[in-house]
Length: 426
RNA sequence: GGCGAGUUGGCGGAGUGGUGACGCAGCGGAUUGCAAAUCCGUGUACAGGAGUUCGAUUCUCCUACUCGCCUCCA
Image 1 (cartoon, rainbow, N blue to C red):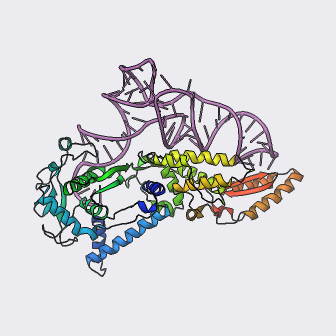
Image 2: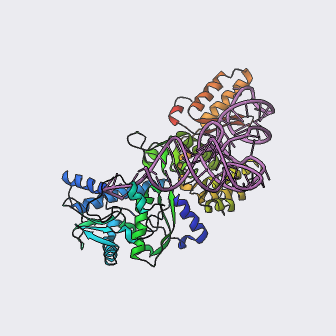
Image 3: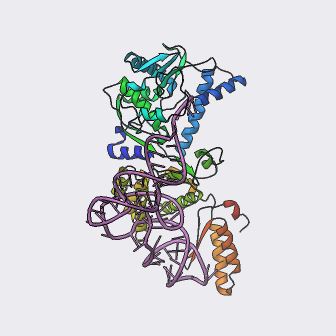
């Protein structure tokens, strides 16, 4: 979703006019735990080095997945550990201005000092306290106050600060890094709706209090969560999987992207096998239809749909209509129309040349087509079609689309194509 | 318990205060050796209730259900 937004903004304002920043949180308990486990297992290097190593690995995986999905890289990808100084400076300013306080080695944000706290997520501090079910840390002045800085023990990475050796709380990194890289005001902040509260709420409070004249993020977009076959993804249900798992199963990144874009980002997206198949078939059809086309200018209706709060499903509808128009004129080459459609799909990050290998069968089907044609010609004479039908059935079973007409035999891989099943058919 | 989001035809999924999107599947027909693909035709869905309105799927309120967040961590 955010990749489509990025592509849209680049399309409208020009590639140079858009700055896209996405941070990596490498002050992270899971990374720390892995690094610590490796150290205890005898890995060489300091804990800090092992953490950096683990971070590198994680980022590498992440990049590989995002690349496979056809997502453009952001202009900058700052890491929390590289901006600790900026975070400390911001916390100091917050304390100096009375928006935060130190207590028992922690620095805490004073939520009551920011009057609009809760505005983004539509909550009020009083309501939240009223409904709270959880124990409150004793050193908090107010139950909703959150940690800016917390102490580290010997097994946890830490940095020296005015409040002792410790590490930043989760929220401060985004405020500090966005200020350093984008300034006190920037246009759009995105994220999953699971982050809206408390993370984004806290970011706003910190940033607005530290930089009262800035606007922080002018617009917020939150995307809904993913589901699987109608259920939420969870390890206990056994339906937890990652983009990497899908890719490893042979689901193309382009197919994953299509499924994601077929639902509006603000609604829960349900990943199902059926959607995967439909997406695969649609993309195959489009790729075939636009074979040899050269991308020109994107269709205005498609751009308008995307610009209308990223109505990607609406854009896809328009693409279906374009495909239909082109297909309805088989006698024309529709060079112009194909170019427009191709450019339009590419606005969505689909049908990019580098994402198309998956539609290739990986095997030359023409020997099968020849054999089927030969059998068929013979069968036309004898009126005994059993051999033809047997081969046809086997091909269909292997996921090959079989088209026989007066003009000849045509084979094409379709959804569920399985080259292994073709063995022994010749 | 608090807060938020969602509920559209068989399935998926847009959208709109008033002429039944779109995709897939289905059904009928053309075509085909049979199919497939293609083409033509075909479907009165907007969770329930109340209200506002000349008119609501679209606005308001209530109810039900689903999901998320509300502790650590990110």
